[in-house]
Length: 124
Image (cartoon, rainbow, N blue to C red):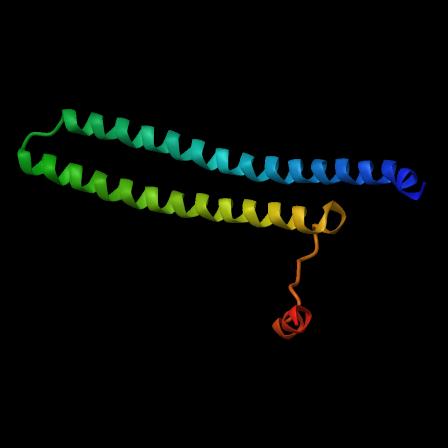
């Protein structure tokens, strides 16, 4: 009888956990999408500007210099944006695991692992 009485509470807790998990994922994925979209727009604008400049090139050395500058700036922008997206993905995984591991009501507090000595004693 006790198990049946606890069933509505357990279901409510599970629904709350799913809602919290969904909220965390939606927020973090939304931030990742915004960064990726920003990178796409910026990249397109830089490539369009390169095409405009290429039309006005008068010598091979100017062409090589223009392409080298563009390649350098594109590489730096790609590395910077990749680092930012990587940080956001790390934050997403951390927030997701924290929500799954401790439940929605405790997700705002950091999860602490027990000291190694305690884990070793428990294993024995």
